[in-house]
Image (cartoon, rainbow, N blue to C red; front, side, top):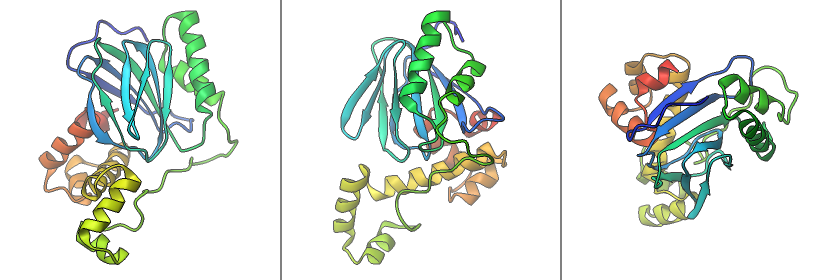
Length: 234
């Protein structure tokens, strides 16, 4: 995987390997790689090939340069920042706790230093070399981290026996984002799951509570840097 010079506007690509516990693999190439606060239901392992990848995770700045990587645990709100140079990096999205992330990153670094590149098959093979479980069949999927589903902040506050303001303060302290933003991310992660299964975009928008396909598209691209159609095609 030795991409051409990165464009200013980032290009995201996704691939879903067969016969692997990995949920999906992604690459991003570009300069404007900043994304707002979001989270995934999977562990995210990021490995950098060029430039510097910068994240704010639980209030802390985390950086990785060429040949380095980091893990962002499932359910952890984080945002990415623009760096001074164009970035080329790969992301592995894996079920929580299924792979030994430090060993995976070390294996990717060894391969990258030895060969000067990484292919999809290399990523999958190296990850599988450090799988922690011999389980067969479907890999575990992270559950939503916000408790029982709710449609409004007021409803959630009533269930908790708290005022709306008190509930919002406590929720933000525990989860790092306001409750309405957390709920939006839960719906977007529901949409990711349905899109990976190949569901039509309009149906996904309706099933996950968005006004229409355009509404889903705007929110999805803002959070993940790619349109639902491009993501689904991965």
